[in-house]
Structure formats: C-alpha cells, structure tokens
Length: 263
Image (tube, rainbow, N blue to C red; front, side):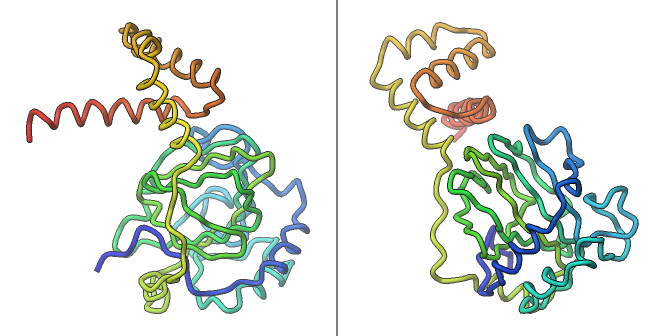
C-alpha cells in the first residue's frame, strides 16, 4: 500500500520547550543551505543530528547519525520529542527568511521504498508562508508534526515579514511511524491554494474581462517579452506570482492543447 503524499501525525510535541531551546541557538550557528541554486534570500539551518560522514553538518551522508553540539548541550531538544518513538537519522532547524523562497524541486533520495521518512515540525510559522506540495498549500501550524513526501514537487514562499523555522527530522521507516502516517489525524484541514495561485487565477479572470489587455499580451510573440510584460501588469494590479508560476501555466496550457488532438 502506497503512503499518502502528506499526513498530520496524531502526536504532540512540547512546543514551549522547543521554542526555549530555539531561543538559545546562537546567531552565528546558522549556516546557509548547501543547495545554493535552489533558493533566493535566506535559507539557512542548524544541524542537531547528522551523519558522521556528511560533507557538512547540514548535508546528508551515509554514515551513522551523530549528535551535534546544540543537541548535546541542550536537553530540551530531546525532552520535547520524548513522546515520538523515532529512529532519527538527522534533525535540522531550517529557517526561511522574510521574502525568501525555495524554488520547486524534488528530493529524489526520499522516493525509494526503503528511503528515510521526513517529518516537519513548524516552530515559527507566520501565516503568509506557502509550503506547496504537488501545488497544494500544506496547512501546517506551529507545534504540529507532519509527514511530507518530498520526493514529489514542492516549493516554499515566505510572503511574510517574519522568519519561518521548522524542525526537520529524517527517520527510518518502522511499523509505528508507517501506521501513524497511514492513519493521520481525522480533523486535519484540507490543503488549500497558495497566494501565488490565487493571484494568478485572479489575473486570468482580469484577462477574460479586459479584451484589450488580453489582445496586448497575445501580440507578444517572444516568450520572454510575454513573461516580463505579464509580470509587470500583475504587479501594477497588486498581484504577486513568479516567473516559475507563469512558465508552469504555459507548459500546462501547451500540454492541454496537445492532448485535445491525441485523445
């Protein structure tokens, strides 16, 4: 039986204790994420547990997990997670600064049948952060624990003025965790749309209503010129979506056009 793409786990964590431990992390401990081409702005982290042979403490490795300095020095990390019977391979704090974004990508190493399972525990989770998995906005709140299948396409946009910080834990599969993921929490809210998707849909409605605006864009035959003009027009109207959003919509439009002739 295949796992769901996401699940809120029926467990609780001690969020106040985690926040106290987070507040004791020295500002100098935060390191830029090793996947430098994947993001814009501040995406940084602090390793709590990572592989002994990892090229850097934040990066993955194949060796045995070792406790890094913040985890060893502050027992609140372990105490706050004491109700989670997990076989932890790595644990990291990941911070996304105000206005920063992580581009859409897939973590292919998490996709195999024996791959590690990744859990997210939001610690600081401002309301205007969009974590999109398969295009759906994950309704994660601070203090909750979520499984996310990040071998699927995902991206994160921080539209807020506050930083977002998650505790990200990679675990080995085991019967307890597999069952918790399968069961989930019945009261979990349904995923929604991110701000970019809402604004893009609104811009499309404007095009349907404003024939002159639509014709002006149709007259642009160069794709880059079309993208630049579309983004500028959206910004003028207070709508925010990215070049990636527009390119994705263009690809989908071409695919739907082609499929109508092959169906």
